[in-house]
Image (tube, rainbow, N blue to C red; front, side):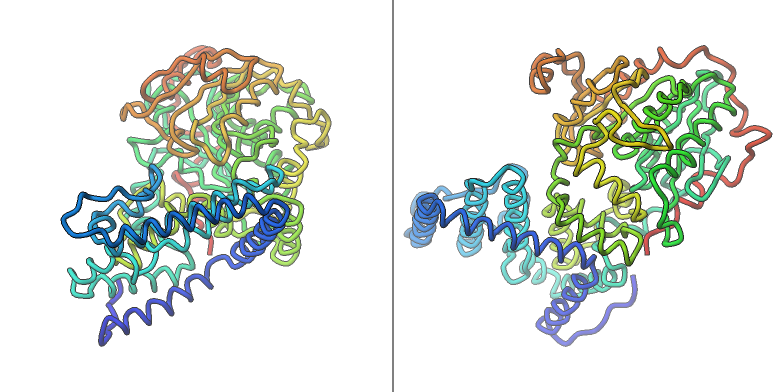
Length: 581
């Protein structure tokens, strides 16, 4: 850490802190906050209209709120020695903002906390009670929650008893340290979620031994060294999202999906997408198919000598894989033996919470910006995902880092989360327009890719669909619909937790639960009611499923590549190390 500045008194520290915090906010992706403010005002304009059309609902809500606030105020004057008073309102389950004893033991801060919760609940109830259509109601509820969370007394030094007590205990050093952390983040233009100095790609992240055996302008192809004497003849190609770095699947040895798959006797290849700059702003979906997926499939097949290749894809990587399958099906090419999809949306009628940011108006605004920039900055994407869980991914770090002066602890997933990639403007526009807005992927002939009209309903490739029960990016009830989209056999498995932790769930930790074998044909909820739950990781279940598509066992290759594809550089390669500026 750089040398700490010297200040005369705590007030000077606070003054500088507030000034620097303003600088940080201004340095964060401005387009995101501008759109957010516009959408919030639009949403609350709808609410104002609703209150005029349904005044009784508004009156009932306000009367209840005023009654509760008055009751809370009167309880402040309970005589000393009386029985403890039950709180008027308590934080919801999982809300950790007010967990410290200071918030309940000190009557002033207890009042402040409860008054805020009453106000926050009132705003959220008003949003939920509106008579808007579901799309606009969801937007109103999201923006109401976001701004209510931002105004929490826990987020401000003067109204957070933990911050005040910590400053007293450290004789003001916590404020100095917090200001230093704030200034460091100001230089980065983003909020730090982990101690980034604790990690280095190729040193303690993405360490599974392997080689880059091919590269072009759009990707590097990595082949990992075998760890078993024999391997399945058909290799495994992993297709990660092109909006994230691939090493989420190869974090550390104890939670690396890549290492696990290799240790189970697979020859594993993975695509490492380029983090594109403005020189690649014209890349299209067809480019990612032809120069990415199809090229990687051909090379994996050639190196292994197999007749087919098994595939795994995650999130938008799965959307890309589904289009590859459809194009190959149209061409009569059966190079893919099986397809595994992790938390992948194909039918976008239920877009999850990301749908809040996707409508004709917002997309048109973004397209206008992309005409000038040509590239969607990875920081914008990262901020959008953080906003979906603002208390956990924004405000908790503001409080702990800037107000309490605590450096975030090392956490590999959050390091990856803070390492986003850019997205070419053409890719963004086609993805949002064709998938989220028009849902063309599920329409037979709705899209023509690589010269082929595609139809998911004609895909005969056996598939394994993994969804997670708490996923807010690709809701499992939406991804469940994918089971009926293909013509081939499909297995559906539901894992515990969310979009990331539900996938990265190694068996050794014996955590969480997964469900299999539910009855199909009667919807997602019926499937879950009739499914069988199992404790632990779903990874062994997938390995068992994959075995039927691996072909015979052969002697493991001595090293990655062959005479035609030699090592370009050791894994993880240089493409993945390029960070967004």
